[in-house]
Image (cartoon, rainbow, N blue to C red; front, side, top):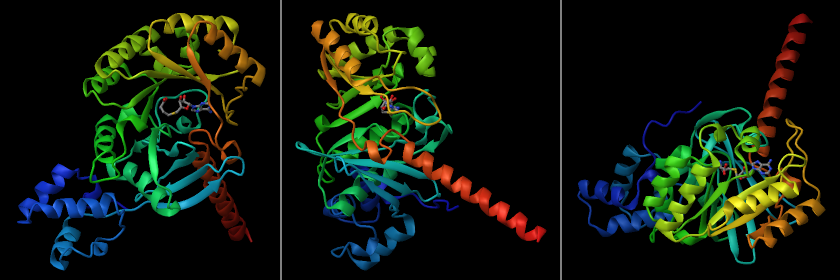
Length: 365
Ligand code: SAH
């Protein structure tokens, strides 16, 4: 397993890079030039900086790494063109990211952690727990490699892949600053959505930054008991505390809150649940996104049938709640959070066991 000995240069934000170069006795414009090579032209080797003197390139090489994510697998949906990328990190871990093509532009869904420790019952990302946080350069690379490989300009980012973004708060905030930097990809804050299972103190901290990003809350239930059955984090923070933090977020940023509600047959999809949901969301400037749960083989949750999803939507609309049903992207390519990574590890494990077994047989023979 490789270990990163030096810091990765792509984890330096514009201010930090400027300082480093100033200390090296470089003129101011060098920072812009080098930042653009790294974060706009998306180079993978220091020597691609053709307008930077060789001795400065050598100095940078001696101090920093320039890592890129290695593509392990790309799956493209035949239904809607969504592509799922499995990337290998420098330490051998793998993460997945997704490119979704919409009329309004291309959106990349990134992972923020290797695995997850939140334990949501229906989610594949959390089955093996948390391995580690993703570093800033790794989250940037998820977007950069997809743009570089496909040639598709990325205009929207969703932090909805594996991991809990607010559990990797500092790196995620720095990532947001860099992905929106005018000398980087310059993605508008308004085109970024951060999804959280509801870590209340961090939602409040985020609100105080007054960013213009959309906050999405994985609510999935309208009462604490049902929510506890689906999401262990509900034992720590109640729905009331989460909704208070959402009101605070709206007051600080003026941004409408998005609530995600994964519909699980017989668990949270009844008429009563819909009416309760409308009740608790009353007065909050928000939008509800209904997601028919994507069943994973490790759990026996069933998807709500289409008609009941429509009914749930209609009940909410009766109470004047803005609601949409999320289009299922990439259903044929293990579209849900962490499924591809999980099946990759399962396959690796199975192959390892098989090899060991073969080894045993050889020694017996
Ligand atoms: N940790 C963050 C972001 C990652 S998951 C969060 O909890 O919001 C992104 C969204 O997909 C969340 O709403 C999550 O609850 C939902 N999700 C995960 N696995 C799912 C599945 N199998 N079916 C439906 N929704 C799922």
